[in-house]
Image (cartoon, rainbow, N blue to C red; front, top):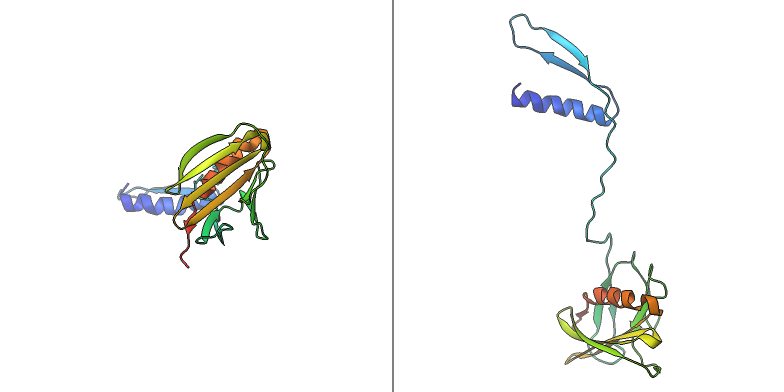
Length: 180
């Protein structure tokens, strides 16, 4: 069968199968006495729609914030399917699936005496200090740069603090300064 005929037949047959219609294939032979035969094809159920997993969320929202410690304003991008944003001061992000996980700009609060875990992390190309206070269910991300001082408090219950801290670090990857 020549290629254009095969393409034409598939263009005619495949849409019929997808619509649930039983197509009929007509076979034409190139002999002097052409013989036409008609053979019904089996009905094929259309396959379910394939979902393609992507790493890109359906929607990204950018929020611009002023730092409470002075310095240049900044922006964060977040997926509203993952985070709820409450714009009233203090602006707060609340995670939709991690119980009691929230973060906001820091403003100083009393801490219980107890262990503190400190680490330096490269986030958004900048070195943040992350101080975790397990007894208080708190992690503090701080960034000291010439343009300003930035502090974010992550609050969660003990068993979710690590996950909440990691989700916050993921969102802080979008941290960008905004020129005035």
